[in-house]
Structures are given as structure tokens and as C-alpha cells.
Length: 199
Image (tube, rainbow, N blue to C red; front, side, top):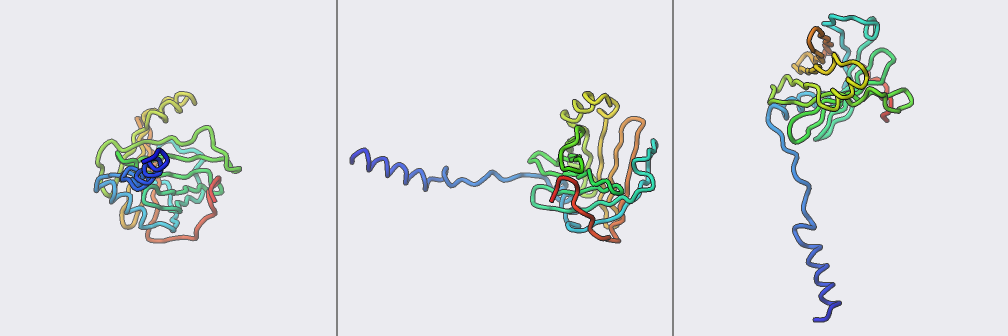
């Protein structure tokens, strides 16, 4: 067999080999993470109004403003949930399956769609949690960002999300600080505009 024929045969064997047609490795997760993810995804395409129920350090950022969460986009790997505060559409929660748990990131944008200096902070699950509740202690990226921005008190942040048939809650806790917003899942509202930076 000449070199040309051997080369053609090699190419054919390579193209039909298992290596060449291998599929991407599956994204594994555990039942409590899957159930929590699915419990939120059930509301995909809907929006709900909320209210601040706990805030031991009130500010003008949330007072007297309409608070809306919109489960806007869902796939097998990620949920995109914009959190509108009045006319401010800068915040989007990203809940992502990572293969070792769930990640929560806060995507903060300016009105022109560009990223804010304070963006993509958040945390990752460190245990199984529950189908109705998951905790996200601040990850290393977030801790370094908070130090850089001179807000070291935020290094101890843990974000929590709760999902029940009638209520979704977003909660921030750290030493001396607690903030919580509850959303009424029994009353869907009109879909808000797209968050800044998204189409």
C-alpha cells in the first residue's frame, strides 16, 4: 500500500473513531440542587412583584420603589433572573449549574449595557442545601472584589434563595446585616422590559 492510500485510510479511521465523535461530558448534579433549579425554572417567562420584608440598614436604594423579579431565560444549565428596582434595570441574577453545585452571580450593567465595576460577585453552594433553599457564601473572586472596592465587610456575605409554592425570597446575610425581599408567586404581573445589556 502506498503512502497516499495509507494517509487516506488514516483520515477515514480517525473521522469515524469514537474519539472524533465523542460527546461533551455530562453536567452532573445532585437531586436537591436539581430540584431547587427546577422549582425556579417552573416559573420561566413570568414576572412577580416583591417587597422588602427585612432590612436592618435601610437606604434610599429600595425604599418606595417597585421591585420585580422576572424569570426571563432558562435552559438546562442556567437561569437568568433580572431584578428590577423601579426604573433601574441594572441587576440580573445568574443561577448556574457548575458540575459541583450551583453558582449565584450578580450581573450588574450600566444603561448602555457595559459592565459595572461591581459585577459578577456572588457565591457557590458548599453543601446539598434543600429543594426549597440554597445558600451561596461569597466566592474568592467576590472577596477580592470587595477588598479592592474598600467594602471589606462584604467579604462575609452569604446570599440565600428560598422557593415555595407561593413565595420566592432573596436574602443577604453577614455579621450585623440582613436584607430580604419576598416575591408573591401567586400573582404574575406584566413582563418588564429587558434588563440593561440583554436583548
